[in-house]
Image 1 (cartoon, one colour):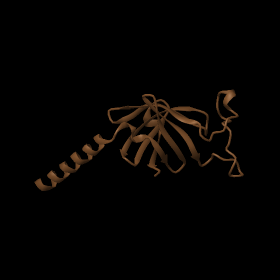
Image 2: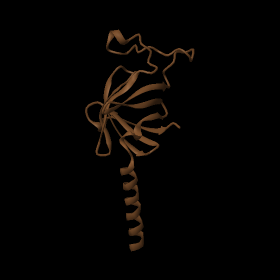
Image 3: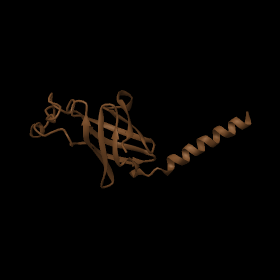
Image 4: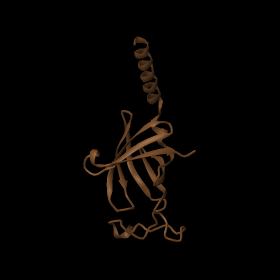
Length: 144
């Protein structure tokens, strides 16, 4: 039993040590989940991401990017959704990414966003309105 407890403790210490070694800039790069592909980049002291691809990005011809028709700003309704800044203001604090805004091209709403790097190639984000418990989680994999 003592041996099992020792092994479990060492495993937790190893995982915690690995997590501490990840730099905040580790989020920079291209990430994909089932519905989206985004590219995070550093923007001053925060991180932002542009939308590279989504399941519903193109018109029926499969080539023409859709317009941002659900945007509440009339001046932006005719812009292409391909490459728009999708996430802004993501801040790194105490091992988590917090305080971001996520603009959804699907409904034209802006949501709060937070996230955590599970390891160098796995990211989990949660978009929500109000409280995180009422949001949706996305699991991302780094594109190499």
